[in-house]
Image 1 (tube, rainbow, N blue to C red):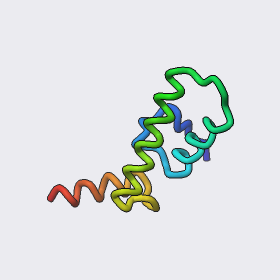
Image 2: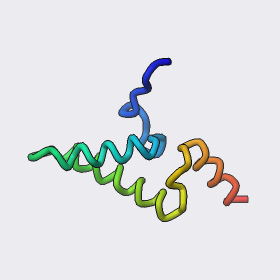
Image 3: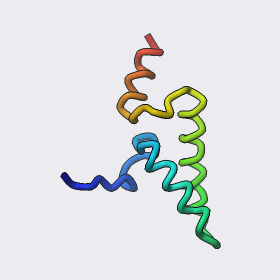
Amino acid sequence: MTKRNHYLLEITKWTMEELQNEIDSYKQLGGVGVKDTIRRNQAEDELNWRNEKGYYDLTPEEIQQEEIEREK
């Protein structure tokens, strides 16, 4: 099984672990660039949105299905 490169995916497609690892990686860095800051902010926004909606333990595919069901 090949390891997927989550950096090639939209942030909404990342797993919770990938989001948390992305956010945590910036805590160890100093002098990050603008693109890195934007990426971190997007990851934090997605993580917070999932927590607010109760999607913390769901995969991106399960979240998409839940959103489709809510629209009905």
